[in-house]
Image (cartoon, rainbow, N blue to C red):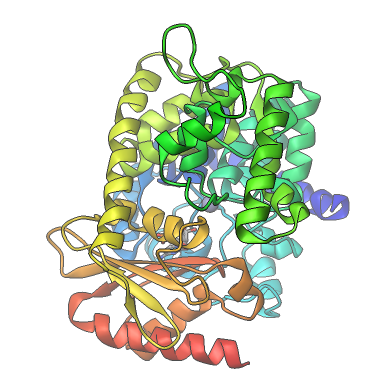
Length: 501
Ligand code: C5P
Ligand code: ZN
């Protein structure tokens, strides 16, 4: 990994030189365009901080995706002002489109892409064409697949932006925790016991070195929710008969002889527990699950005891103290159309933006819970032979369709069959298109399912020219309303083919 990092850093040095040369020719501020999820917001925050520290004026815009229409708008805007542009956490999947609209004969806009998604027309990390793209798009395009680094697991958009920032100025090492929040938002801490792998683990070393992050072993429950609620609604651990039922869960904990109330009457959180109490809880859970579900204790322990990453300078008990909770907060900002609040928080705001974001978080969590129960209670999942799909109708808007698809696929709930990919379809307001978000779990990705490829092939087969793609386990696009049946049927066929090959 160190050799790969050396090459990446040496390329980034070239990128920065190129960037600075172009800055000299431009009198306008740098325009940063970034994605709206936690990884995109942290990408924007890292770039913003790094440029601010160099006294380079900039503006950050948050977009739900770099669709063709957006690229056309950006081209019109920047050509008037001669800005230098940076695209973060998207841009690779649209690099040909960007070249066409921003770098055609009449317009030459200097731009940089710092991304971790598959480049346009590539959906397989072993595709030989990646090397050509690498060669031809130096020095303005940085992507982990150029270095045989897996962009779906080993580094996120924020991680790429972090290495850009650190190459620009080594003092930016203090932005390493922000990069880890981005990686966590993209669920990249998927090594054993939620560890980071690849370049993410090098970023973690940086964060530990500057004493900003600490890795601790802990129970895999939210550290800041009342513990009965945290266990009952855990996305990973299923306790038959107790999960989903906070009052039964409370009784279960009380029978262990653990005092559950604080002096003010509130229920205690994991943060309030000492080691001995945590030990009691974990033994009881292991005993309970191994009896009820007949699974080996070691299998339960692997899910139950995980690495937790603590942001040492943040207030204990706040969302910001824990990488995962921090990334939830940012995600909720982006997905409730408050991206700029998320960027402000990731850049260090602990006052107004943070306070507002926490208010939105409550609403956001409610809307997710409502969406999930609606799908469950009203039987909204439809099946084809090799895929499953649902329509958000009036209940699930475009902004959260991807989050809902992820929750259905990646959490322990059994609302859906995890052996088939899921496609969520949300009608875009005032346009005749659906936003599509597809998700597949690791088991079927290992068997050959690649959603980025499936979406791109299905678009082609359906004669659609929208941009689409992402990663093997998570990809998206947009599809006209009158083509949705054809598109989903083509997805079905392609997934069948992927599983046979
Ligand atoms: O939009 P959604 O959350 O479903 O996207 C899943 C993944 O696919 C994300 O990482 C997103 O950035 C990526 N994506 C993409 N190109 C698109 C749509 C989504 O790279 N046109
Ligand atoms: Zn990302």
